Length: 458
Image (cartoon, rainbow, N blue to C red):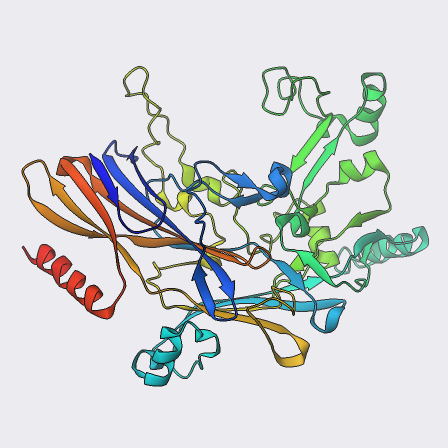
């Protein structure tokens, strides 16, 4: 099958199999826009499709920057923001950052606003009647740490716990007041998470095992040369525990790790949800074996992190021909392909949605405007173009297929907004040719909708 791309944007098609063994043609198109004082403008040099996952600064330990575009299907739209938080008034101990996506019903019939959109300056659109699609806020702090209280205080706390039969329990730790900060890259390295890993040389291994308790040490099979945690050329850890919702974060620890390192302080997370603040109780709960809250952030969630990993399925499927790639497990859930945090997933966007970002860019950003209390606000409207396919099968029959907008990447530091659209067609359609086009005007979109409706009523 041939793909003829006349959209003006990078596009590709490939085959992919779902969890039931069905084979599909998948069409994917990526649009790249620059943030300007006049709104979003197509980049002269469009960014290519991504054929593999990429990481911040090319370092997997810093988390996912963007994932591959070559996936079969996303049941929801991902809105992913790779930004730096900027403090209002230049420097603060803590401040709010937010992402809002809305659809303004009034703007559709307002001639003045329609003209503003036509001129590309739809930044100052008033939200008189709006449908809120995503509304998410986080709190960013300066550097802070969990610090072990003095021995006398800890001893008194222990006596109080014993005297009250455990009713009153004071933590051995305290959370320091945040220092002032100017900005912070919003990566999951700054959110709750991390790895508690005890490394020790062979000569000291027995002594360390005694200190932390043999029950806390990894078994020989877990650290053997064939285990997942045994990196070639590196000493296997004596003990290892991972915060599975965010292994790249900070603030996670275990009692045996604290015994091993004999540290009196631990860096604390600097990004949190307003209604789930990081406190000493958070740390105490983790030390008591509780899972802890989900990490706070706007970036993509790793494929192997919980809860996303649960969607990957567990059942092996051996019914495949030799040389074929293993198909997806039968219990695979397509939600696995969505990389955004759950509160940044939404029904497919269609274009013309309004995005409002607060304190996620510097004050001198070309799309920035002053907000309340010294905050910085960025607002832009997605372009309204609708990518679609005209299809012909080998018998000469034609059809049209709308592409769905399933990924929005926003990077204020790079001044870019990238949109990924996708369409899938079962191979049983026996396609001979697909032509990728854009419906840009309201007349073109109405005509396209009529064609789609006629197809559905046949």
